[in-house]
Amino acid sequence: MKLKMMYSFLNSDINIIEKALEETIETESLLLRQASMHTLKAGGKRIRPVFVLLAGKFGHYDINVMKDVAVALELIHMGSLVHDDVIDDADLRRGEPTVKAKWDSQTAMYTGDFVFALALKLMANIEKPAAHKILANTMVEVTVGEIQQIKDKYRFNQNFRDYLRRIKRKTALLIAASCQLGAIAAGVEEAVHKKLYFFGYFVGMSFQITDDILDFTATEKELGKPAGSDLLQGNITAPVLFAMENEEIRKEIEKVHEHMAPLEISNIITLIKQSGAIEKSVALSDQYLDKALAILEEIPANKAKKALRDIARFIGRRKF
Image (cartoon, rainbow, N blue to C red; front, side, top):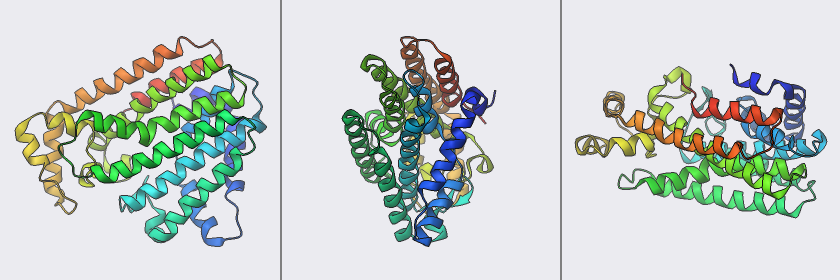
């Protein structure tokens, strides 16, 4: 089953979100509008808005309220990607030129700042202090995570604790916040919105580990960038850490640098794939996915709960 079919009952509301995203980035600055629209039109699964809406289904669902939260979370995600591409000096995302590549790094940084500011402006419409505290804490942690990712580049002696803390901040916390803030906006009781938070957190961890696996197992066409790009940029992920448990492979991986020849990085990717690291990484992703599904069992049953379960299984175990 395709991902969008799992929440097809939200289609009309998703269309409202998409239109609201376009309307929100309207500004008198032509450059900011063009750069923001470029990022928006690059696509994406809109997973965070979907989680916001599904979490809202456990309470008093009003699309006019949910819309602001859903758009805000997607804008924060968009802004972080624009900044990521500057940090990573990336020219492609999803097969399309990044804002940095199409314009320049300065434009990209201000575009990211612009969409962050728009997100905060929208969230001001939600008159629930707890929601603002959660969002602020999440944005702080995401920023700390970005700085740590820079410090960890090509640091081959890092351990799994470093990696898991990094992907928690990079991906899991924003998905967790999407679930919790959607529920809070809909007036869901605290016991339930806290469980939705942990569901989102575990799904987010599984999601990122799977992304890191796909960087080695998917094709350039499927990834929209060359396979092994994360490693070439110095990002040490779960498959790399598992592969480095073999001392001979570790010695080869430690030779990786930004300007490494394609054939050399291709040979290292082959070593990683043959080491059993992919299978171990899949098992790690599945551990988080199982935790997410277990948390979901503690939440009241409705149509949204089934959709959350199906989406979790899809994004945690997606393969090309």
